[in-house]
Image (cartoon, rainbow, N blue to C red):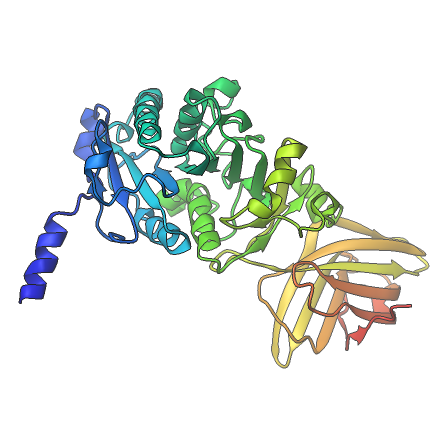
Length: 441
């Protein structure tokens, strides 16, 4: 009973995120910023910090790195569902201060424009607090702002106020509405911190098009996410699913359950066309990954200016796809156009990749390179099947002869490169074969 009463008194003394409801949003809220501190000593119990005198809070150690978590527009006023998980994962990663910037009174308005105008004021409030931290001995180098949607621009304003000296800003799908034609001073941009990384998931709706960091990650091209509803009949999730995916991908990256490889490229279509599957600029480091710790690539990225990187995901956890570069040489008499289906088998289980984003050209003695992305990971591949669909349903079936097929794993360098030589296929018919080790001569 003593323990229960201790837990009860602890939970009563926790400072929780402001919980508002729709009536507040209808009436409109005026800005009030609260700062909730979490450390490894109080992972599940926030402690509100005083803006003027934060050193009064004994859990606040100014010499530790500090991450600020900044939410975006809250049209319903409810606390973000992901906040607790993000706090826990950050603290599992590092012994730091995590400060949740609760500006729900301000973000919770049915009028989005009002919330946008409050971002400047909230940013000034946060800037003053960080200056106070500096006076207490905190280093700007070790401050990381993580901003979601409208919060990404708020983070950018703080960084700009501090002349870009903050260590890092992460923007998770920075908000698009009211920012699409904004200049660099009016939105998040690379000059706002020593290092700025951005993840895009909804550029054609609530997110912002373009590149706004030293590195910009574009999930599935940055606009439409797999598994999200395509029609308005799905209700609320039609509007928020793509936009929220940025947070869920980031949680997954922090959890280290999905370390997704991303490839520098000028566009998603070039990436799907297998034109960007090397990462020469980062050697000896591998291709960039969607992870929390980007330090292996940071110096190179800062030198390179702005880098766009692309990757594809599946529709659910752990989001990672199994990717192969497929090279083959065709030797067929007639020119054919088609799409390619590839299946990898291990026993009776299989996973399929469809390379159907555009029609491919198969002609005599031509080498073709594809990017094949599979939803499921199969580590030991016993059989591979391929089908080339040309859409030819009348007339004779033409044969397509592949002199060589080569499968190179892209993000699993320890796995073997697989080959097969001289395969005769008929269009629209599946052919199966056992992969062989490639002759390295």
